[in-house]
Image 1 (cartoon, one colour):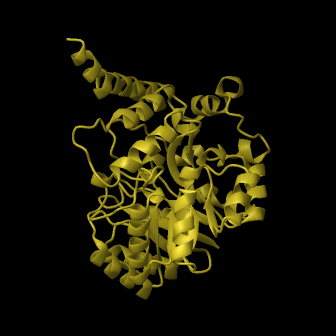
Image 2: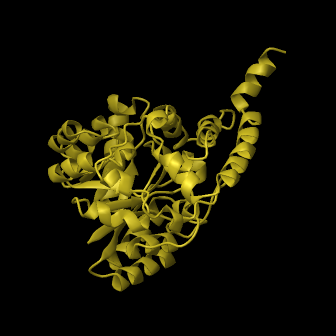
Length: 367
């Protein structure tokens, strides 16, 4: 049976819908938990920009957790900022974190996703029975790294999205520990901006500085995606139809990310597509919870992607050398209209190249 952890929109009606889905797909798939964080008076950085998240305080979180519990759905608190601004290394900061963690435990938080090992140590010392899940931000992509986190006390590890098509490695990792994969990742394989984007987001997850440039990494990401017609196939997503290939090698836990899109999107519809293992439509819509925040979107007909994953299942490990491999571009040419992809990418390039705030500031400084 597959288990799903889904970005919280903090709506009771969504929890009710998840409860009904759990009854409908009992024995096949279950939504075991949602995840998120408070945005009011939060002292710990997270993995999303605060302005993009649902507005929620500690009291509202407590009510949401209790309601979810009554519907037999857990909650995981996101403590996964890539940088804590060294708050966890000062006496005052440690004291603030301890008080905050105790308050979260008091309202029913029993599970946390954490990136910083230092924060993991503080949480374990403060609430020894707190379940720790290692964040995808930690980029766990080897057995050695996985074992280190398990020895450090983690109960589950969200694996690096870049290995999502390396079935041999995934099988080895699944043998070692309880692991989890993000199914609807839109991150580009080997993105040079990822780590730096995580750091910027951490700072923007507790306070939004209006004078700061917030679009640089988002725009660079979208610009990189428009590099060629096959870029969308090089992202780290998993189709609903392909979940079965991962369960066969021992992976049973999957996460549907999108805390910035869940509130105004349709996470219930997305969840059911994955639970039943089937979707008919534009895969990009599904990956974004049917609430795309971007201006330019290709039509990646999900049904035409049948067979794409077979190349990787048959021991063809992605070596991150697209120039030599050519699998993705060959699949696009064979199964899609490459002209429509190129047209959309051309528009995206023009837009993102002409909307570069950092470049604009630099040019103004020269005047």
